[in-house]
Amino acid sequence: MEIKKGIGVSPGVVISTAVVLDAEDLLIPKRQVPADEIPHETARFNEAVTRSLEELSVLRDSVAAKHGKEISGIFDFHLGVLRDKGLLTQVASEIKNNHSTAEYAVSMVMRRYANAFLGMSDRYLSERVKDIYDIEKRVLHNLIGQKQQDLLRLTTDVVIIAHDMLPSQTAALDRLHVRGFATDAGGRTSHTAIVARAMGIPAVVGLGNITSEVNGGDTVIIDGNHGVVIINPDEQQLAEHRETERRRLHVEHELSALRDLPAETKDGHVVSLQANIEFPAEVDDALDKGARGVGLYRTEFLFLANEVEPTEEVHFEAYADALRRLSGRPLVIRTLDLGADKYTQAKAQNPERNPFLGDRSIRMCLHDIPMFKRQLRAIMRASVLGDVRIMFPMISTLMELRQAKMVLNDVMEELEDEGVTFRKDIPIGMMMEVPSAAIMADNFGKEVSFFSIGTNDLIQYTLAVDRTNEKVAGLFCPAHPSVLKLVRDVIRAGARNSIGVSVCGEMAGEPLYTLLLLGLGLNTFSMNGPDIPEVKKIIRSVTMEHAKQVARRVMSFDSERQVMHFLREETRKIDPEAF
Ligand code: PEP
Ligand code: MG
Image (cartoon, rainbow, N blue to C red):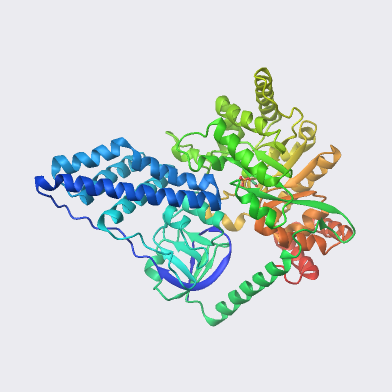
């Protein structure tokens, strides 16, 4: 048995038999053809491109239908590269001038493309290099006559172990039989990770050398929640995980009955459970899990499939799509939260030394007013299509909030001058994720319609723990009394100012904290869709009075260990199947 720690990028725990994908790097020998074969080689290349374009269009359309345009946009990038006249001319010239075979010409030119990306030496673009390899491999397979590694014809359940999964491979996985995957390479913001998450396939990446430690046929546990892979688990481990899986399936089945019931305590106190989404298509699954709306739409994911900034129309289409799916339920659109670990930092010419404390989120938007306005215009235009609310992220000073609202006012005036209709009294809220704002919550409460506590960042900034650094992951803890005091004070400030307060960080979806948050008076919980049923079950099993007692007791502790221990005990008393 061996336990390996990587980065959990898509949640869920699975046990299955491993299929190890070979490093598929095709060896293309340098070979020349006589002059009279040049037209034939050129024709072969053109045919391979045509076939690849056809395959990609089919793939794009099926991914768009299943998972939405944001993910399928990755394949628009592939299609764009393959239609690029510069690329096609370079390959044709390589064949013509150097008498190269079509295979060799393709690999030469594509490597040149890849090197151009690599030369820029940043992380965002290095993810794009993988897309270039993906395209190269597809064209080569079509030239050589082999089909891409075909994982579509599986007949039994497997987990896939690979050096890396290309975005297109991931999107084409057979959801029925591929239970999970684990890779040597990869990072949290890679396309592959995001596609896996949207497809609901548990995944752990960044494991270093998992491909050399697993043999095909080995039994493997992939725990996407904790970023752990266990190779050939012993009987005890296996039994534990089987039990976890059995419980999960049982609980899932049982919980599906709660779907249409309100999140109401035994003594009639009702709260709203909403979903966090990255793509409009996720709305359907969230509603299926019982979400009453979207409490956090992370719009920065619109940058995922685009090399360039999304246009106003791209923003608008995405919002309109989400609103159509929500049929009148609320949609909290968070304005762009770029920077730090999300997209732009890696593209920057001069990367920041401390990006989490740098030009991120609302700060970046206020430094790029045209970009900010494009998004705000789209949100306001969409505001007449449903229950839209705006939320500004990472506000740390009152001045910042006022500036953001001023830009929004400018946008409203412009739209009015253009005769465009929009909702003038759109609710404007802010994220509470920086301690300076949480401490001043009373002042902020007079200037916004709602707060949403982003515990992921609030913990990071309160405890000085980088949320992406695995070396200090043990210190990242929602139960730290300092964090809990800030959460409590924000909820109180919300009540004093008669405005709504939600928590939209991961803490909201962790059953361990449900009793506490409820008892502190939280009225909206926003979480990943799959977490909703379990949280609802706990809420429906307790009285508000009991939750308040729990909260009072928790707030008297001075260590996170005491808090967690007490919450675990109390939660198990009312829901023995929790955790
Ligand atoms: C948070 O910080 O808690 C949050 C919800 O935002 P994100 O995870 O996108 O930073
Ligand atoms: Mg945040």
